[in-house]
Length: 164
Image (cartoon, rainbow, N blue to C red):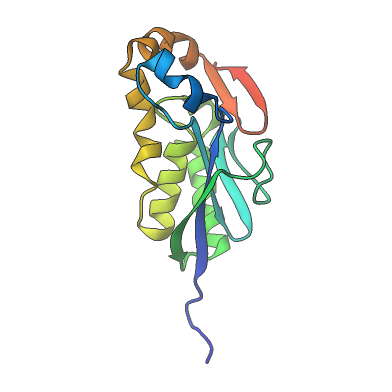
C-alpha cells in the first residue's frame, strides 16, 4: 500500500571536538568533569547539516574533518520533504544563521541543530549538549576565557577565524 505522506529519518550526529581531552583535563581547568566539547550536525535527506563561522553548510554524513561521530541520536522521523527543508534552511541562512551571527557560546552549531530538530520532529536535542556552554561559562576558568573565545568562530570544515 502506498504511503501518502512519506517520512524521513532524522539523526543528530554528536562529535567531541576535543577528541577526549575535555574528559581528561576538564576537572583540572574547570573544577568539574566535562565529557566532551560537543559539535552537532543534523542528518536528514542523506546529508549532514551544520552551522559554523561560515554559516550553514552540508556534507555527506561524517564528511566533516571531525570524521565519524562519537554518538548518533535518533530524533525520529519527519514528513518535511527535502525541498521544503532546503527553503527553511535558506530562510535561516539569510537571517539568524548567517556566519557573522556565529557565537561559540550562545549561537553555535548546537543552537542550530536544536532549532532544526524542533522544526523537523518537534523534539529538542539532549540537554547535556545545549547546557554545556552555560556550565563552562559559570566556572572561573570559563569567565576568564570568554573574551578570547568570543572572538573566535570555529568552522567544522576545519577553519578557525576571527569574528568580524
